Image (tube, rainbow, N blue to C red; front, side, top):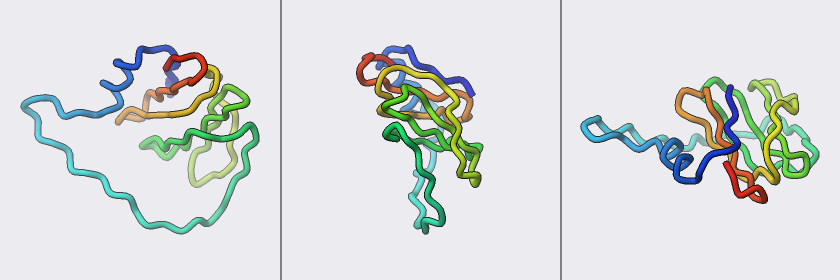
Length: 110
């Protein structure tokens, strides 16, 4: 997976919004499944942002380490995998699961 950390906010919104281009049918709306917590993994460095890619990879931004930790679900062992900017506060993954966009609050960058 490619992690993008330097992009303009407009580029992020255009890519992450998943808007339907003109002339294409709209995608069905996703629903939130009901679930039961079966395990909890502890992460240091104040985990804040979280996203799950289509292939089941969980990505968690760690504010105090300036990195994104990953785990391939259902494995709950997170590994620091990607260095990002200062204070990663949001993560969005493209539909193909090949690119993750990380918003870095104090760098004012994506």
